[in-house]
Length: 143
Image 1: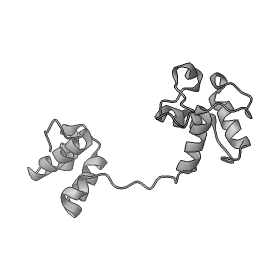
Image 2: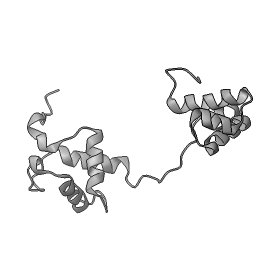
Image 3: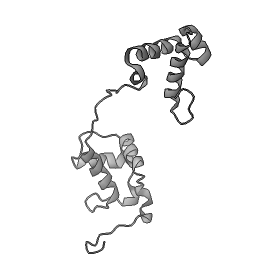
């Protein structure tokens, strides 16, 4: 794992710290040789001593909980994809700020930024301004 080409870089560096430590090298020497900060070397040596190989894995990060449900994101994406008579905006004219305003107007969400809409559209490669390249099947009899 320490010198494998298929292992991730972080995992490889952590394993190299452990290998250097098993050869009796000091933290300062390992830090110099690997060009890492001394505190980083200390952390990974300590975690390996406490937990073994499991200590070299990334810990679960708590992070901030999501502000939007997957259903809300899907509704905004659906709003992006289907032209609507009530919005009075042609599909080719949807911009991210307009989509955010429309989602708030339709009570899909209470607050929504244009950057969030842009990020959601990017994950699914949705581009409403290129609507003439899309195919809408509106006939329920067609597969």
